[in-house]
Image (cartoon, rainbow, N blue to C red; front, side, top):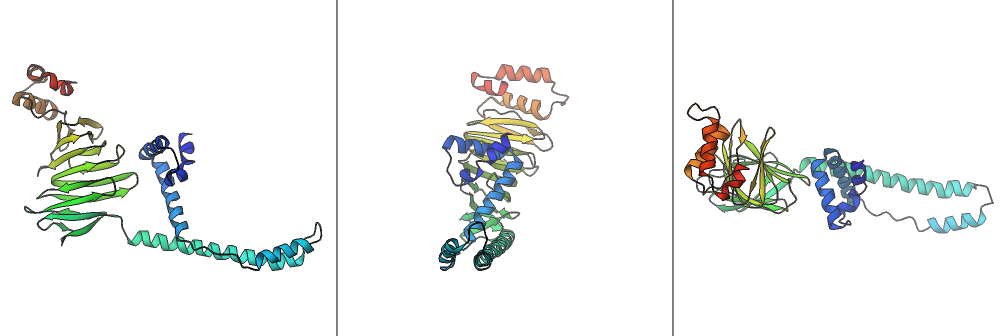
Length: 313
């Protein structure tokens, strides 16, 4: 029932004709409902197709002929003139419109197949590459393409119209998806900084050890050669998730992930060394014979400050 009610608002939502609060509700529903996202994409396609159709004017003689036919038509009888002189031009006009519609649909589909969605890339330093092709000053990163930087290269990616990502040296990143309900990168190694202004769970970054889900924020994410990662949030919130294991990381906090395990517990990096070691043992090495869960928790409780209540909770 909810999907059918939301679907009735898609056209007005697309044309920005709904109140802000209602538009936000529709956007949040689209993020979580794949069926409605598919229907919304069809509506967008229809709008784009209609924009490509030319205006076709009716013949100048059509309306005078209609008026004459109405004046001369016997009551209750359909005249031969009406059926032959007026119906045929109307049918011809309808046929032309139908052919234009079909042709426009074919052209639009062909255009969508030939031109993949892409993001703008700007060179900041050195010689970054997109699929082994050097980026001079500006370039385009298409779906499935890799952007790589060496030890002296840096680049900036425009994430559609919702933000930007800076790519540090020795980094490899790929564009996985870009559409109204999802923008997704894959960070294979290296370090990136994201600044996003968008509804929650619209921008994602895949790593070998988890998925970073933007909740409207700014953060840095780095992946080492083993596929483990470290997230540092500077504004807003970020969720880290892998196989049902999730951690929500607030501004000022950090969170590590391990390949095959997923995210650990968020923490503040200015905590004591013993606190951070004990937390890593509890998150990623619970079966370490030199540590047991009870002593580890004792260390955490003993080393915790009031500021570390977030981690303990």
